[in-house]
Image 1: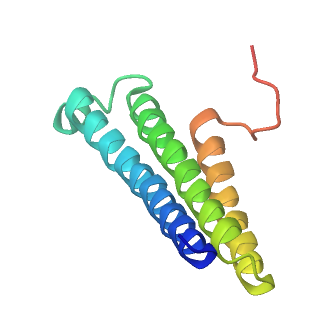
Image 2: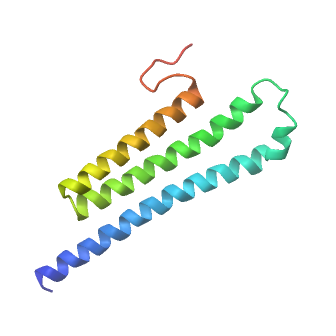
Length: 123
């Protein structure tokens, strides 16, 4: 095997790994939402809206799946950019993407927990 073939093999492996991580992130989001919809019963939930904390519990469970899936999507982007094409433009695009996804994660955390991620939990 020549050096070029080894480099190409590594590139293909990293590309597949990044794709696998991103697919896993999407599956986590879909599976989490489906799990909540099925186990909590979306229709049953709609009839329990008058109960205390029904909406909050439902929202927290879906939000946690979204947060975990976003983390995997960011990891896939980082692997792909850093390992395959660490040009200034690609790293800048990755930085912008991570910034947007971080804002989404913080927004979800505020929505789920009612506090910023760096704030202490109220007792």
